[in-house]
Image 1: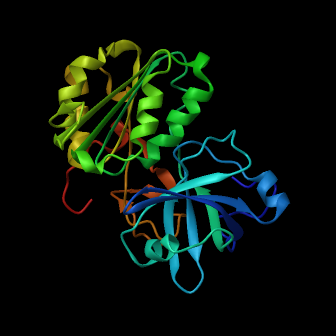
Image 2: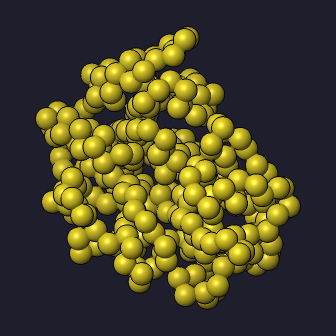
Amino acid sequence: MVANMRDPRCAAPYEAEVVERLEESPTIFTLRLRFTDPEVHKAYRFAPGQFNMLYLHGVGEVPISIVSDPLDEHMYDHTVRTVGRVTRGLAHLPIGARLGVRGPYGRGWPVDEAEGKDVIIATGGLGCAPVVSVINYILRRRERYGRLVVLQGVKHANDLIWRQRYEEWAKLPNTQVLLAADQAGPGWPWRVGHIPVLFDDAHIVAEKSVVMLCGPEGMMRAVIDDMLKRGVSEEALWLSMERNMQCGAGRCGHCQMGGKFVCKDGPVFNYPDVKALLGVKGF
């Protein structure tokens, strides 16, 4: 959170500048931002798994996960998929353009609770951005954690972004990267099928593992069922939920899930807190 400054949940957006733009795929890009006010930039703090509200003047506002590591104080990366009016506007921002930033919001990944344990990260579809920050976090503090296992499933081989990054992670000590696609294209070197086909290769030790999930809810339910059968406790399962978050402060009600608000009580939840709501129509 922005330390010693006005509450970001109540304030107007801070101004930020686009300092770099990275094309991840035809529909996904990363904006590297820097606050234009040096004091704001110096004071800003966030945790892996939190998000910002990015505001485009005259267009609107949208919640976007922060994918950089908190140690990267010179920049804040946001990976965006072009799906609507605001994200289409963000997609056309050149280097040097200005936009508004509110945040950070929400509860992030349990990085403190996971210290000393194996961290299993399972993500599916195109929704992998919320876990990139925690992967970066662990790799920068490698001595605090056990094995890091990254499991990524996509519908089609062409949906996989950050292929080079996955390959680089796989070369690191005590780190395992396993990838699968429902439909494999030419030259696909990894497994074919849904993400559970990867679990046997992950050599999961249930009692010393923390599992972090992100992706379509059907995929997360399948992973949770499999992990519970392998002896992983419910309390060791964490998942990032996605809803229509419009205010970031739990006031507008758009992201309400049962008695919880995804923007305020999440987006990262411990499984026992939301298991009764998963798969329930209307929640």
